[in-house]
Image (cartoon, rainbow, N blue to C red; front, top):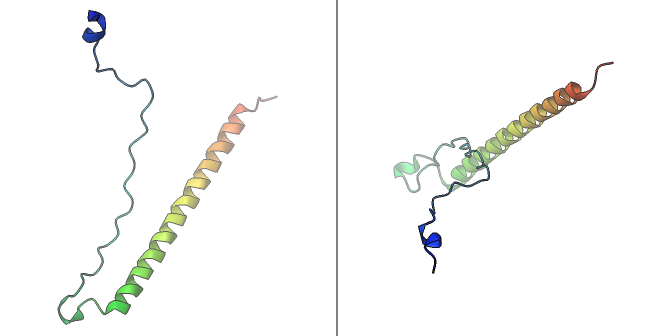
Amino acid sequence: MSKSSTSAPMSRKPTYPLPPPKKPGPQRPAPPPYGTENMKFGNETQQLEWAKRESQREEAERRRRLQLQEQQDLELALALSRAEVPRT
């Protein structure tokens, strides 16, 4: 056994770029607690309707953000293509 293999440092940094950290998603309000006194948050049907509305609201927000991102990407692509066209 050679000494060079045992004395080599093992703390190498990765040579590839690390991806950016993920952004947290929007915070959704907590669902009504189950089995509260006097059915303060409604019965099961009302809770299901609430959950359905929240789901639809979240989906609409997701689509709005996606459309905005697509628009920004398109504008960037157009700006880059204009910058590459040689002026005559």
